[in-house]
Every structure is written in C-alpha cells, then in structure tokens.
Length: 437
Image (tube, rainbow, N blue to C red; front, side, top):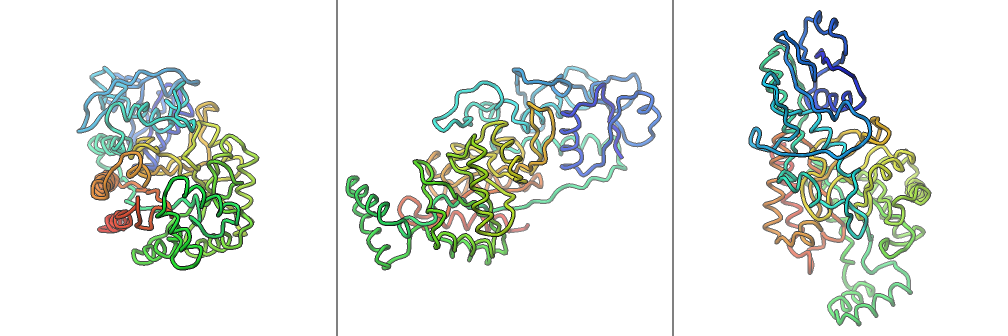
C-alpha cells in the first residue's frame, strides 16, 4: 500500500492519482491529510504539496488539483526525459521538476476544451488549438510516458513496491456511416444520385451505379466480408459503430426499417461488437440520442453500451453527460478529425471527469490514435506515408503498454478510386499490431 499525504484530498487529486498510480502503474494507493498518520506509517509513502523537514519523498504541487471551477492556465513547456513537460515547480527537494499529477489532469480532463475557443464548422474543438499540437507532443501519449517516469522515481526510493503494468492492446473500429453506396436506397434517392452524378459529369460513378443496381458488380461500400475475413485471419474482435439516424444533410445511412440494413447489423453483431454511432442531429439533443440507441437495441435485442459520435462531434461536458444519462458505458470519440495522435495525451482507457460537476463519472473513454479520413483527406498522405505514420504511432503505444485504437469506415476499404491502396494500409496496420503482441 502506497500512502500519499496532501494538504487537502480533493476529487481532482483522488481521480488523477488513482489513474496514474493505480490504473497505469498497478499500485494500491490511499490518501491522508494527517501529518501524524503519515509520520507513523512505515510503508512506502510520499507527500504532495507538503514540504517536510524529514527525508520523506516529496512532490511539489501546482495549484490545479486543489481548486474547483475552471480558469485560464498558463502552459509553458520544457524538455524532460526526451519529451515535454509543463507546470514546472521550483523546489529543489521535489522528486520531479514539474507537477506530473496536475499536468496529467489538465490533459486527461480536457481542461482546455472547457475554455472559450474558436470551433470549426461542425462545432468541434480544433487540434491546432490544443496545447499538445502547439507544443509538438500530439503524437506522443505523454501521460503514459510520465507515469513510467514516475515509476522510476518510486521504484528507486521503494524497491519493495510491486508494479503491475498494463500490456499492449489493439482495438480496430469501423464506423458505418452508410451501409451501401447505391443499393437499397429507394427510388427517390437512386434517381437523385443519378442526376447528381450527371451534373458533376462523373461518368465513372454513373456507370458504377448502373452496374451495381443491375447486380453486375458489388456495391463499393459492401466491404463487410473483407473486414470479417481479416478479423478471422488475425484473430481479432472488430468493433462497429452503426449510424441509425433519421435522414438529414449529414446523416445519410439507410432507413432504419430497411430489412437489408437490419440484416447487415445483425450479421455483424454475430461475429463482432456493435455500438451506436450517434448522429450529427443528436449532438446536444438527448431525446434524439435516446431514440437512436433504442433503435439499435431493438434490432439486436440487447443493451447498447458503446458509442462514437458521428463527425466526432464532442462538446465538453454536454456530449458525455447525455451518453451517461442514456446508460452508455464506453465512448470512443476522443480523437481529432484533422490530425492523428492523442487528443487527451493518453493511450489507455480512463473514466471521464466532469470538471463542471467536479467529479469522476462511470463513463469510460477509449481514445483513438488515427482515422482513415484524417490520413487521406485532411493530411493528404499517400498509402506509404500513412503506413509510416501508423507505424510510428503504434511504436509509441507499444512502448508504454497502451491501447491502440484505429478508426476506419466500411466505405474506405473497397480499394477503389480515392481509396486505392488503402486496404493494404489497413491490413499492414493489423499485422503490425498483432506482431509480437
């Protein structure tokens, strides 16, 4: 048992100490504000924010974990252990030159996303506004790395401590924004699609539409057999997120009543995990969210516990509160559309901390590292460049025993046109993940 002395045991302090020490390092931890209890304790212990005259291990503190409310924080980075750190402390007796606990809390809680910011056209917090992007550590799971540096300090002082570190995991996820490109969409949408292709003079698409609807070739979004074949080949469990929205400008999947769509969903659920893909229209609308979750639950006859927001629309803390109120247990939205990397600077699942309510919630956040559209559309990478970036990100995650989560779409794995060569990127990523696992 590791004992921590602090001047005040706040919810913030308890949350981030448990994340770093318990979840990432496997230590059992307890807390005290009593100097007498701390002094008489004979096991491994350290003080946080309380400088003692004795030789007890001491970590100097930033003010963040002892506050409530949200205010601007100055983040001034410096080099540390081959990476970056901030919230420097200026006490020579401190075991680390920065407050690793407060800095981790700032990143994991997404503190900066509660502050006034310019948003993109979809109301999203932009990667380039983040401290991780501005200070060059977006592609590093900094919190995991800091935890391992903390381990070195504790192990050096208390060799008897037994650590239990997490091992690398891989979770491939697929968003089904549109189950089919052309099939099963009804006469109105089929005719509209023909005219749009003609207006764009896209005769390749026009020819493809005709051939698909005549049954002469497969629908380009019907890649489910390919995905499931790779799952079987590499002994994986894929996680699918299904969009079950009413039709709208940004929600264009098949009608919920469509029997072919429902059949696909049930077949996927027989061999893979399935979660809800809350629609663009559901963002900020708890009633619409609940309706969509109920639709998927009705199709599968089971509770729906996992989600990822369509368009990655995530507003702190409203989105997560709505999910909690709808009994969602896990969310996989934590990542950026325009940049690959680690939005919360962590590559391990963790519980959402609601800053406004100042409390830990039961909702587990599963941060993803990259999205197919990020690599191809936003970053304009070639398949070879994308594979290199994926390899580098995965090395970072493996080095800290994290969980590598990828986001792809059924529509991008057809190996055609704009996505020519990307099926190989996807399989290379899987192969790299399972190699030496």
